[in-house]
Structure formats: structure tokens, C-alpha cells
Length: 179
Image 1 (spheres, rainbow, N blue to C red):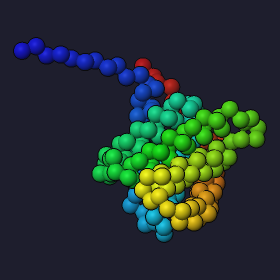
Image 2: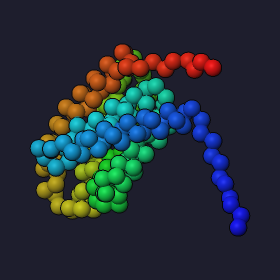
Image 3: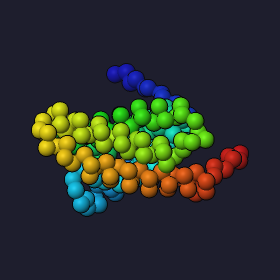
Image 4: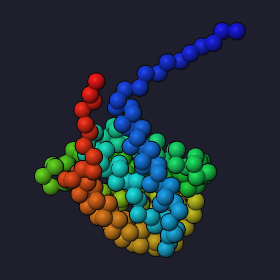
């Protein structure tokens, strides 16, 4: 019997993304335990990590962290391939597209707070579209849009401010490796 060994070397960037994704997954799990005043209204704490990664390491890294968070979080919560997973995945995907556009806007005017607001609105718009076109194809769903938009604005501002604060005063600066 012959054993095959697959060797996948991991770079320091891979390790960093894995740590950030793990942190985002932890925040998602903690958020899932929080009570919600209205189904679907959550603060999006893991989006702070996405915004930090976007500002520090670029869109591609933010996309990896976000997609790993959505998939791994749904596996841990037992919601993989459920309607909740597709709501989360669609919101994350459209938010990433919005952040990709936002990164191309002038940084003198658009920063973490505006990026967060844009991503929050994109996220809720994608979720409402999935609900309307797949789960509940009734115009009554659109009556909830102002409530969800207000929540997106509120939490988008808060998450953006937290991100801006963390970018100004990092909790941990990487130290050089001594050999």
C-alpha cells in the first residue's frame, strides 16, 4: 500500500488570513447567540473584521475572510445550505461587490464609515431580494425595507466608527520575528 502525501505550504499571509477569519467566525457565532428584536436585524460585528482586512490588506483578503466566515460559520451553526445560509451568503457577496466599488472611490471622502454603510445597505438589499424572489414572493416583504434600512444605517455607522477607531489605534502591532 502506497501513501500519498499532499504538502500544501502555508505562507505567513495564509496564517494571518486564517487568524482573521477565525476571529470573524467567533464574532459571528457570538452574534448568533444575541437576541434579536426583529428577525434578520443583527449588528454585523464580524463585518468590522472585514472592514479592517479591507483597509489593511486589500479587497481580495477581505473577500477570503468574509467567504470563510460565512461558510464556516454556517457549518458550525448547522445552517449550511439552509435559507439562512443563502441569505447570509447573498448579503456577503453583494457587500463584497459594493466594497470593491467603494475601494475605487477617493479615500479623502470615503473611508471606513462610508464603506461600512455602503456594505450594510448592499447586504440588506441582497437579503430582501432573496426573500422576495425566493422565500416570500409577496409585496408585503417590501414594507419591512425601511426598518431594515434604518438598522443597516445605524449598525453601518457604528461598525464603521469602530473600524476607524481600530485603524487609528491598533490593538496589536506586529513585532519582528527574532531568530
